Amino acid sequence: MSGPMVSAQGVHKHFGDLHVLKGIDLEVAPGEVVCVIGPSGSGKSTFLRCVNHLERVDAGKVLVDGEIIGYHEKDDGLHEMSHAEVARQRSTIGMVFQRFNLFPNMTALENVVCGPIWVNGENRTGAVERGRRLLDRVGLADKVDGYPAQLSGGQQQRVAIARALAMRPKLMLFDEPTSALDPELVGEVLDVMGDLARDGMTMLVVTHEIGFARGVADRIAFMDGGSIVECGTPAQVIGQPRHERTRAFLSKVLS
Amino acid sequence: MINPVPAAEPARVHRRPRWGSRVLAAAILFFLLFLGQSVVSNPNVDYHVVVQYLFNIEIMRGLLVTLVLAVLAQLVGVALGAVLAVMRMSDNSVLRSMAGAYIWFFRGTPILVQLLFWYNLSLWFPTISFGVPWGPTFVEVTTTAVMTSFVSAALGLALNEAAYMAEIVRAGILSIDRGQTEAALAMGLTPRRTMTRIVLPQAMRVVIPPTGNEFISMLKTTSLVQVIAGDDLLTKSLNFAHINSQTIEFLIVASVWYLLLTSVATYGQHHLEAYYSRGSSHNGGGPPGPTLRARLRGNLFSLRRAERGAA
Image 1 (cartoon, rainbow over the protein chains, first blue to last red):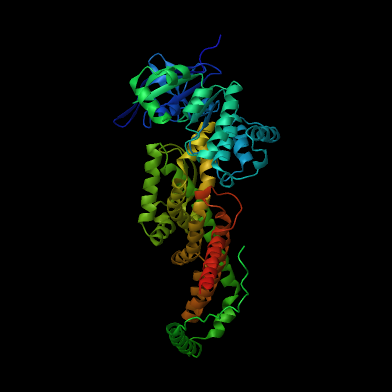
Image 2 (cartoon, chains in turn cyan, brown; image 1 turned 90 degrees about the vertical axis):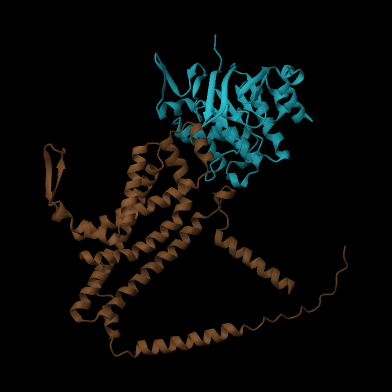
């Protein structure tokens, strides 16, 4: 038996006086694709960043593959982990950012292999060989020696996906991966993500692409005002939304 | 298709005469001639002495000391400055305030005063001992044995430079997008390795040009060690000057060498800057492309061409 890959339990987050996350509960099963949709400022990205401890949670906890992220649980509560322990946890969780965040001083291949070499201590030859295969898998076999500045937004984002996959993650987080792209480049990135989902990768995707969510997600969570308003299959959430807020949001983005 | 028009002889374009520049140039030329004449025919200075002593062995030794001091102080300054910059931006408030206090002190007192402090340290602490505070002492040396003028000079210049370099490196670190740090952390790098492998290498691009300026400035600042008998270029020059009562002659000797050093350093800096400005952080950087200056030149050139075409 295997438990959930992600289990968020009553996650709260404040930015100063702003209560951004008001008790998020969400589970993602291994191999499942969950899309988080919702208006801007609803806390979707903040929640995603709590999953790999880029934001620390104020209350509640996030477990990935049964391990609490960022904290040790003791009798008297949660104790912060060391930097090295947090880094080890993060190395098993891939993340793709809205603004790609490729390292501009490295080629596409160097971006992909630096993690395996630096973090996992893989040998150079093996890492490079696998890096080439990964870039081939995202359709960029001819761009291995290109620098980020020489690539289109869509190509950069595909390199970023390959870079995350190079760490052999058990979970992939996507933070609005197509929001910074020109419209004609969105498709190529979504195609790669769709392939990844079909290959059985566990994915948590914050997105505005309702079409992608409907086609690829196993479940969709709709967030508004720091809470998950409703969560269910695409047919339920998009086809027959139960809440007025979900209907209002969908009518805006689908029109 | 447009019918080709038979090519006419292009009209010759004449620049508007710049009378103002010509008059000014003539006036300056006249003044320089006058100045040159009064310098060359000056009875108070013996220029043969300048030529005679320019390559004097003692002057050469002084030049070497100046160069070694500048390079050493700059290297230590860069290394210590980088450490201070990282400390200044640390999450640890103790490290942050330590770095802040260091920078406050070393930027807040004149370098000349600092040099005098180091040189005269023995008046304050006659001996330096290594051991457990308030406990046993393992090694004890007299301060005068350690704080030679060279050591005081190098130490004073380096520690002072570190304070300035810290601010330069800090600006470089701040120029790197927060997303770079997040991507590295998400990959599983610790904050320390994120800094040394991702942020600092990229910050170099921003740090290098002002560091070049600092070094050029350092070549000249070393002359201050003359007050602590630093045996540098200026010390040696003034030694001769006092012996022979030929102050101006030897100040010229020193100036010729300082100018040469700074000119070579400036030339080197241009190349370093061109190398590090390949690509810019705004469009991602990295790729070997035209340098910033080449791009600028290219733009100017095409601008001028456009002007000519319009005329």
